[in-house]
Structure formats: structure tokens, C-alpha cells
Image (tube, rainbow, N blue to C red; front, side, top):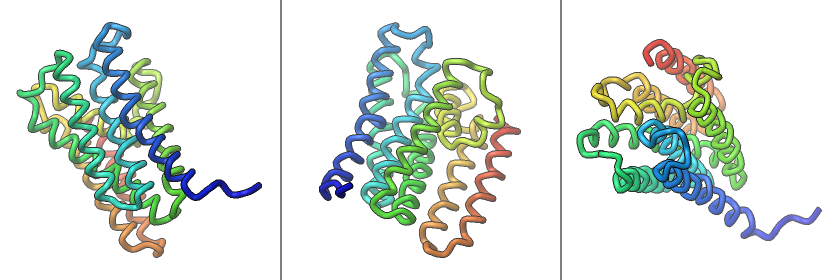
Length: 224
């Protein structure tokens, strides 16, 4: 089978990023705000933002091979979705410090994984990012649509769920202090992932990354 033209993969990567990270979350936000779902917007905003920032930050970092690209695009989408939610009636001003911290931590974590995929898989790293985004998004959306259907330990393993939890808690009275475990998990895994990417192709840092991920998942499980 002949190889596709060189521009096919980059175009496909950025198309997937736009579709999953921007089009899908914006469409979901508008439909929920128009009453097309039984879920209120203030209950769905966390998962929507988490999936949007993950789809943008992780795929963009993997496709571009640059951590900073994923961070900036992920932040832009996160802020844009928050502003859209505010325009549709979701108040933001009282919650901005907590929400800003959650969006920043989540974007850095997602972009770090995308950058690692680019380092370890080259030009095909965005495919791994796409599979990860699709898998985590499916679980997070299932948990949103059918509360209690999935075991808590499974949700505690997912950075997308950590981001969703941090954002949702940002809208509560506890603010950023109520989601300290999720925020710590996002920051800790981001640091461990960037550590692995920096030392690539050495493989031993993966042990540090997976140990950090499991330990912080346990922290989220017991404190969420």
C-alpha cells in the first residue's frame, strides 16, 4: 500500500484537534444551554471543559511536537469555553481564581502528555493522543450521563476526570481548596511526564511517571 502524501497526516491531526477540542465542546455547550439535554449547564461544564482542553492541548502538542503549543491552544480553548458559558448564563466572576487555576493545571498536564507522545512516537504521536483523548472522554461522558455506573477507582485514574472535578469544584463554595487533590494530581503528573520527555530515549523515568500517576490517583480517590 503506498504511503499517503506528506501533508495528509498533519492536516488530519489538526482536523481531529479542531473537531474534538473545539467543535464538539462548543456544540455540546450550546445544546445544553438551549435545553436539549436533561443536564443543567452548571453540572456539565466541568466535563465539557476537560474534554475540550484535553482534545486541544494533547493533540496539538503531539502534532506540533511542542509542549508550549499545546499549552497555549489548550488555554485559549478553556478560556473561550468559559466565556461562552458565561454568555449563556453561567456566572464566572466569583469563581475565577479557582477556575483559572484548574484550567491552567489541566492544560499543562494534557500538553505534557502530548509532548511525550511526540517525543516517543515522532510524527505519529498525535494518533496516540487521539486514542487517549477518545478513551478518557468516553469514560468521563459516561460518568456524567450515568452517575454511579462506573467504579470510583476507575474515574480516579483519569487526568480528564481530575480536570473535570477541579473545574466543577471551582464553582462550589470550597473553590480551589475543595479540589486540592485533583489539582495536585494534575500538576504532579505533568511534572513527571515532562521529566520523562526531557530524558527520552532513557526508559527508566517511565517508572517515576507511572508511580507518580498511581500514587496521585490514590490521593484523588481518597480525597474526592
